[in-house]
Image (cartoon, rainbow, N blue to C red; front, side):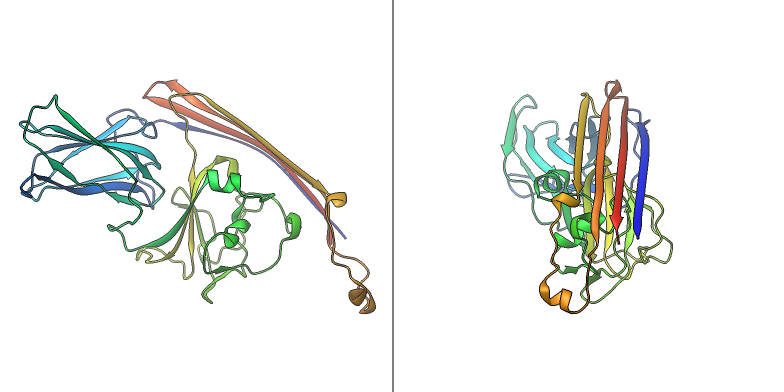
Length: 323
């Protein structure tokens, strides 16, 4: 029996967020929070805290510390940020190189010294690794990791090989189970529990029962920036009784970026385990990948600097198997 699938897709995403406007917050958004004090340890209310990053279309997001000296900047896109603290009568304090993965709230505190605003103290150090602001337990898989690892196909089915405690429900040798289907395997389990909730930037794309099956939306992983796999501490709004996967999409930026990737495989590149013992049991043939190809092209950049971005992706995928 032959099983053949083809998919040709083209998608265009345009960021219509204007500067000084707040973007719509997706589930598992990132953030930066902390407290500001002076050199004596006293809290400082009224400090202007600015988070700047090329990942933000408005470039800078700012808040002011409250009466307890604390602040919280929410709904930040994944990326690398610099955080600046300013207050009249004190030296400006800046923390650089804060890396935010998806669904992570970084704790950044500041100790400000008396002085002029034009005097700046800049601190560069390792990014916070522990999220003390949330109770969720999750693993974040950036695109750089998925591109570096020797996987033939980037997709939901590869996540069970990367997340501790996640057990795959079946074998997928050389993408013999398919290439562009987006749903996780129904048999996937996490500590004995089944049922997966799959979201794309917070929008659920699995069926409402949360089982992760019967998904007709095929995710193009060339459009995915990061993958956040939540394995514990889920919020009350989640209807999944197992792990939860959120795919964070790529966006345009203030510089043009072009990317292309392609893969191919066929029966001559696939080995088998048809041993003499199996032949003695009457097995004469095995599942084979006859033809498999996946071609992706993406393009993104600015329509207007710091105002309007675009991102587009086109994909052709084909798989033909002998079952």
